[in-house]
Length: 475
Ligand SMILES: [Zn+2]
Image (cartoon, rainbow, N blue to C red):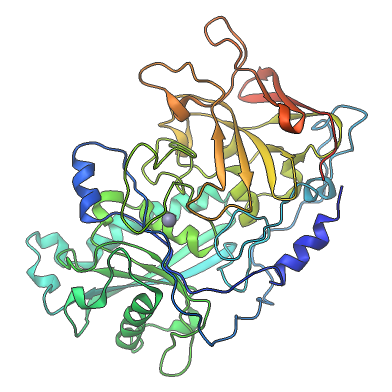
């Protein structure tokens, strides 16, 4: 096994980032998509391929030297019984560190060493300020529905459920603390002038945020804020969608020099997505990639949009039936410990007992690396908690490739159960379960190219025993 820990350290220092670029994180619906939604197409769509702007002269921000907050540390114990094959290495944090994958990419990616100088560290308390803006052509007081004239309405729609969602998904390691304004800020230009439409470039979003910061700074203490949420009046038709805001060039500041580098500029698509648009976009500010299929510059909403991960993971489908994050992402975010990930990097047999993802149990995934940037991951998904709408539970297998960019398929769910019923088919039905006459052959996954076989051998209560056999060691 190669020394991936030192590779990860180099990555963390940013030396492997090829070209800092200014990009808009693609986001969500347009009026076109809203129309599609009305005819019951899947509830999420691809955004435009990121728009690049000429390279800025600003240097990259230095990696953060601030220690991560919260309880990211391992409790220190190993997990006897997780790996029961005597020839396999004993489970320890070091063994799972060998299953971390580095990435050749900068920006949003699925590598396990997020650049903490660029993205917000999602541990402990993350403080957000929410401000509400209207425009000369779209005054809040002119909204037809009286409720839409009140900031409280928007806060209630976006914040409480998102805070609870993140608290649960992070196993209590992240507390999103949102302080909302109570009055409208009146921006000086018509809403469409700010260019918050699909295809916008970073400079447009940067200028919009700067205008908001200038208006807000008398009432918001930005020194105490990690994220800025900008929410437009419902009638502001020119603010069409809700991209995340990540400014790695330190260009937006208050008049006294305080940086405002992360947040979300919401649009009038909030009613389409509900509170989970806040969760999805906030997760971009933590460094997570989009897992749906994007590309090009036009909105796309067709069968291919969710061809990578189906309705699993709200970075893949914001309105999906199983929106809980993949364990791989929870590991990347620091929401689980290294010793909650079993690592099958060595030749031979590795066995793990997988607890449901949302349980925060002893072992949540088994990672089977197949190269410097690729791995198969198996985890136990059950139709409860955030995944209550999932049509099927079992062991979900997916392939991670950290050399694949956001929107291009860094994660692919493997469909090991293509025998779905009409109500549960395609990738929704992907998890493996034990071999039965009704579901033959779904208990074994084989990747001949990498000499890997992953088998379910037993289930007890909500736990699954999984055995990985591999012909060759990874790396
Ligand atoms: Zn996104």
